Image (cartoon, rainbow, N blue to C red; front, side):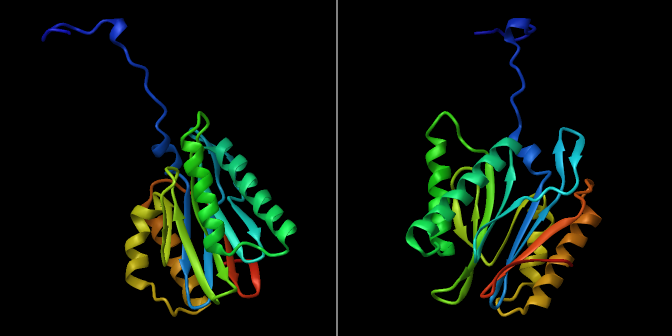
Length: 219
């Protein structure tokens, strides 16, 4: 045990650990539910340290006809885990001739994240997963973090966007919003983020999931 007043030596040096949360927070994804749809939006920047490597990255996966997953986190983990989820859910649909509903897809995905935490290869991935439940004709959105926590929510965000925009969503969100009102709320959130956040996240890729399937839209 070191006594007071004694300067630390080189043997006391502890290397700086990788700060996962500070890096992944530089990404941003939004999810908003309305009357009969779910909107997903993700920034399109692929960054490494202080360098922007790509400005048109797609950080979403259409995992079935009515279900979308937006992801953020450690670059290698996100791509690998997203493709793993997409291909397993599509395989389930091929084998059983029916796609998993949003809640079932979210529960299976959360279980995979929770299981990876108990292994040597945990995935550092945050997710927004949801879509249109064709059995009950309702839109569903699930917030999932890298620790395997899951919650059904009317709106959600990951990254620094959550700090700037959750209050805006809370103020203006309504469960019976039509699609144009939902897109207007999303634009309001992106404008707020562009105004307040010091980092420019570039353009956002936006998809809508409803009873007709999944489609990409522009703001």
